[in-house]
Image (cartoon, rainbow, N blue to C red; front, side):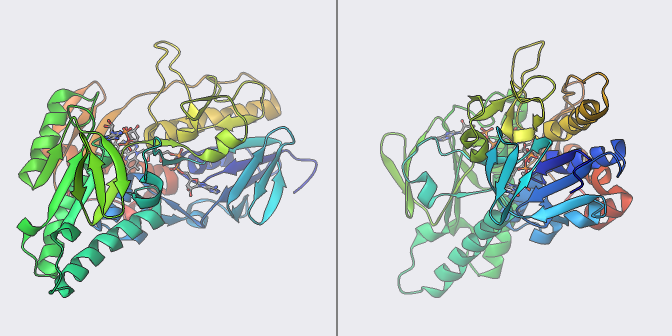
Length: 404
Ligand code: FAD
Ligand code: NAD
């Protein structure tokens, strides 16, 4: 690194990290600053497609994009390594294989599974967290089918039971993909569909708690029509190997348990000693934590309030992408002077896929969309992100053009 230039270090190449890097490249020239992007893998992945990877309805590689295909590696030093510690008082970051110093730091390390202290959750639950864990879920489910088919003497029907814990957006979207994938697996392994159970267990009295009830109801009915069973108003209390305990100590045996019951910020931000709310770092509207003017915390790692309502913004890709512009502008301002920008979230709506050609959601002014119309909108949202990241070439390579 050139000691005469400020060094900007970005941790995590998810939505927030990738888009902030792109924006910094637009706002700064090679003479203005050195930029380093650190990520666990040499690829970026579409977190919003991981439920499809986990069910096996899209190939793993469809969700992965090589970082160097979309970020100019002549201008950004790309380090493939794992961050192990953020030493905010000495302006250093420890990696599994080294250490780096920074002048400006962007922390965009994303989310982890939140287990809420439920016994057995850490040890026995799968979760849709990254590419590798999602692929493991896909392979585990298929292995259960193969094993059931081969184990003629001691067939255990619970091998074909899949429990999804939580009916938030991740749980609902995953069930939608399973509704498409399971019939394919049944054909592949000559297993009648009625021998397979997919059960969604949700603690609250409805699916998608807090979301538009009409749309939530539509989602539930669509999934039930394709064989998903719901246990609503039922909390998961414990997870064991091969079973879960729900409600009033009822035990359900299952070959697969996938937890979609909630997410929390990457544990490294808590370990760094920042002030937290619900595990996320409190940041002001310039996206910085109090007392650390040179640090920006974005996406699922940060707790940022809407100034007008006092309500925190939800942890979504939409939010992470929008924060990038404010963050890059503010870093440029810190280097060259000017006025810092205040972040304001522009909620463009929420659309969730329900598998196949089905989807539902709200767009822009609260207009409700259902079925194929919503599915087309979902694909447009996904393709728009690909366009922002890698232009038309990336849309052509990875984009979703058909509504199924
Ligand atoms: P992430 O996208 O999680 O990226 C974090 C990056 O940091 C990753 O590349 C990771 O590899 C890297 N990293 C993590 N730890 C380390 C480490 N120690 N060292 C180095 N690198 C590390 N939101 C929407 O708006 N719309 C949707 O349709 C939608 N669908 C979703 C579907 C699913 C199945 C899931 C799970 C989430 C969905 N979300 C959706 C939420 C959205 O994906 C997250 O809010 C978003 O990914 C957060 O972006 P981020 O940049 O903060 O983190
Ligand atoms: P979530 O926190 O939104 O939902 C978790 C669900 O699990 C809740 O309904 C909760 O009541 C339930 N739950 C928690 N503990 C339970 C227990 N012990 N037993 C039974 N049920 C329990 O988490 P998520 O669905 O992973 O979503 C995380 C974030 O990602 C959210 O902000 C969401 O909006 C976003 N997301 C958006 C989309 C989309 O826009 N299409 C898709 C997926 C995720």
